Image (cartoon, rainbow, N blue to C red; front, side):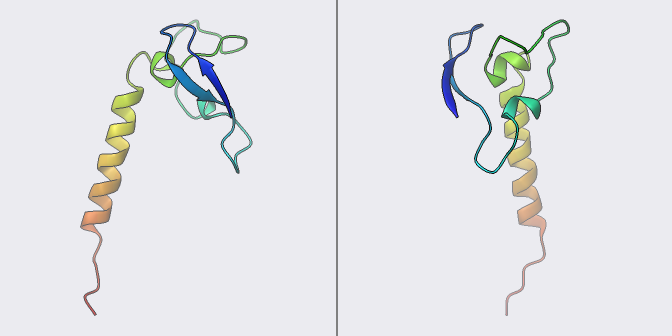
Amino acid sequence: MEKLTCEECGTNFNCGAAPGKDHCWCMELPNLRQNFDLAGKCVCPNCMTLGIAKQMIRARKVRRRLRQNSAVRSTR
């Protein structure tokens, strides 16, 4: 992964494929910018999703916690 600076907001972020993956994380986030072409311009996850990336990540963590807490646990 490469350390880059977002061309929109100036935030530092990691760009590139994580170990064990064959594509960059940006391919997994929705591009909510209507006419935004990802080729040649790197932006942070928050700018790519128009500010909702943090909300999406928080919601995923909450859902994961809820699933873990609701799982039947054996007491044996």
